[in-house]
Length: 132
Image (cartoon, rainbow, N blue to C red):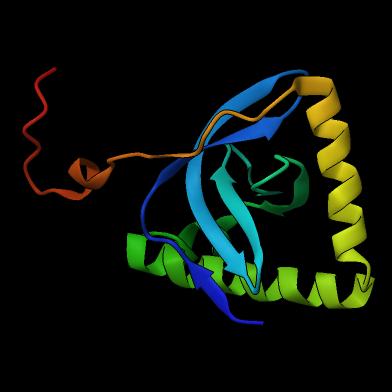
């Protein structure tokens, strides 16, 4: 399975008591799509089409240092994709599990809002043109 990380920041929706918007990056593992959402103490990795959490990556000093630049973060997320690939290979029944999770999420919450691209390039500019 090929692993690709989308550098474009996107708004995804996570399945809680309602669809909760969250901003992060897509990790594609073969035909499966996940989103990596940074939180205060971890990176939440959820399946994109259902919004269901797959794994949580704790943010410790090592992870903090490995994600200090956008380029470093993309490389780190590729490693997360490799970890997801191993988990899916070990489970073996990922398609069936995903189908069940989607059904539960959609029955509880209705249709998921569409995923949107978000412009975050201004964060990395030396001099921002954003007026506060």
